Image (cartoon, rainbow, N blue to C red; front, side, top):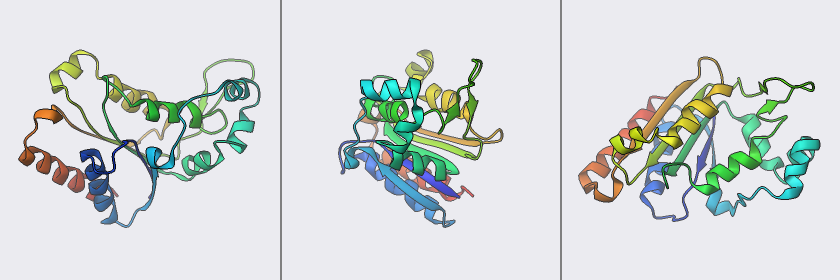
Length: 198
């Protein structure tokens, strides 16, 4: 499977980076074709500028062919998506949210009917969706709040993918107080779960 792994963390020696390495080690078991997009290492600009917004409204193809062409090509090639990120302020880091704002464009992720109505997806070829995240909050607190980050990916993003798209969500809660043993167990779990992806 051709997988686009989108990684979002500013520190190259973080626990999140260790999680990315375990994701990649697991995916290597079945020889998946993996493309890693490291948003911070790339210096990705998450800000949707006014000119891009106007293109989005009037000529979305201009942005698809221009500033976001490389990202668009990577999305269009993918059969699966994996996101590795920390949960900050209950949801996605701004960098990752900005990537969705700028890269998931009309003509790429969906089509807007000329005379109105519901947008039509263009991502039915994506048959696997996964996320690996950490959070400082206990599980029950995020559940009480509706788990905003999980909802964006498992419901919002998922709705436009293949009808039988497989999903995987792995989250280590209460990261600040997690023991070394608990962190190691989670790393092993991540690698094992991704080694099972076919």
